[in-house]
Image (cartoon, rainbow, N blue to C red; front, side):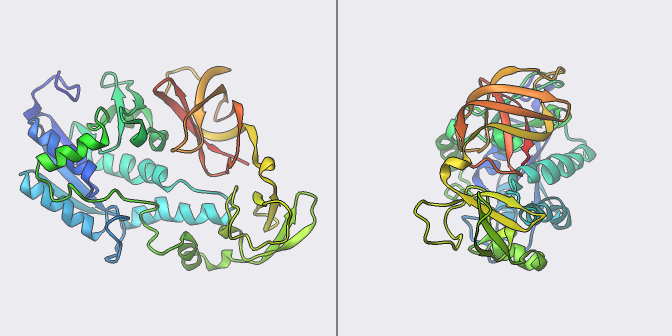
Length: 364
């Protein structure tokens, strides 16, 4: 068995590497090339904006050139695929629709779920690749079939949360060469490999939002969403008006436009049907039961009833213990401690120790 789990020589194992133009995917591609694998790099052109700054972009013009140069300097094939329409339909439209519906989207998950692990994976299979490799910080364990997904060695960079929607058949095909490395080690490898991107900053925030605020993008793509509505308190008293529910997220405190309250007020609820916002104190955000739907399960063939495990609702938070209860395509997670800022459109992702069991999309 070679390091990717195939019973053949590295030179006979064809691997497509998804190259975003950043340091992580570049190191992944060169690492596999140096190990003797038959590597083809593919970069997806996801949007066209020459003004995207280097510390924010992913798969834009400057990144495509960076990926091309890495492939050229390390003697492996590189392909650019124009996925702008697919990205717009699968990710940007979902982003705009979510805010328009009073939800808070997770575009990185949608990107993995659509263009990367669906469309790109199909492209890899079309050219006869044995596997698709990415620069994600996560660990895949197990045989060619029924693989499992685990947290990366570097917990501070772990990206398993964003991979919860990966289907089992996709996980069987995908490889994560960087999962056993710390980020600092990848930077060192980039310098050792003499990559031009060795000092390139990681992409930040939402890669396709190029202005100071995501609200500008929503106004441009769906101007009708900015309808004035009423802001209430929890007793249905009118506190003021808003300029559109897409300008607010659950848990928001700043920029609400309401003053004079003795206590700090937060967005507690967003009602699309009534086009209204409800405010309350931070205590009203707290809850320990999270409801979710559209579950993707990677924890085996049997869906659990009352499983002791852990979960989290933000990629940057520590997963916390509780009870998972799944009923077909929906379920609940009851945390031992109360959380705040549980927002529809976000994800609840379940773990058993370091293994990712699956996740679902939080509902109201």
